[in-house]
Length: 66
Image (cartoon, rainbow, N blue to C red; front, side, top):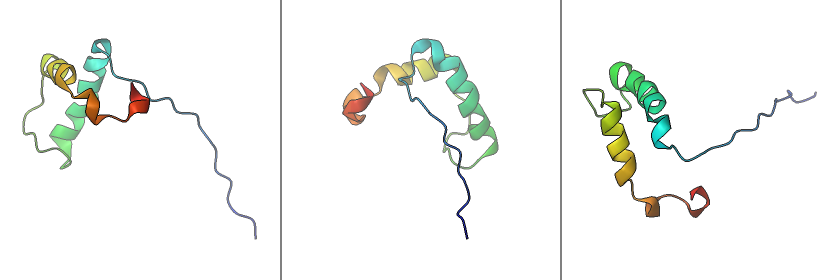
């Protein structure tokens, strides 16, 4: 009995830059409005997301991320 074949896909994780925050907010918006995985009740604005990104402690991220 052969095992099923699994396709491999290369994925690159990059640091979100300010120019990415509108897309990040659009993805997060869905989960705030339609899922229980966020404790937020209102969708943060792009500006709020950019402020969060700017204050995120880089020390909390794995060293391979920066």
